[in-house]
Length: 86
Image (cartoon, rainbow, N blue to C red; front, side, top):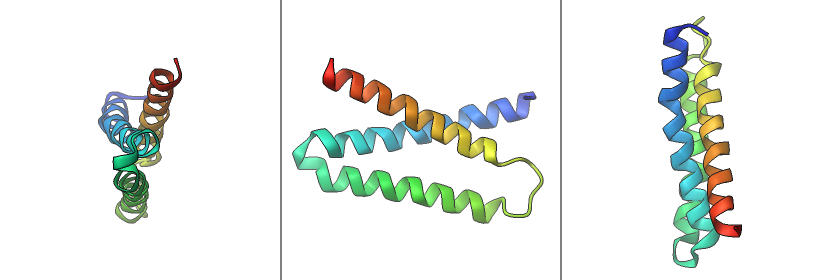
């Protein structure tokens, strides 16, 4: 992984954290349920659609952007569930 790929990976990490935060807010706070769950799912879906449309024919290995987002999502969900259950 070169420097540009490393930067792109970590640039998309906060997007995953934001999605995880929205989903956790929707799951654990009743007044935010609809906004959090719908917002998190829409943001995640919109991000994936954007990556597919934007980088469909590029040869710049854009899957690393998606890996950064998924890694952020996983990290955020682990942190959120850890704080909620422990």
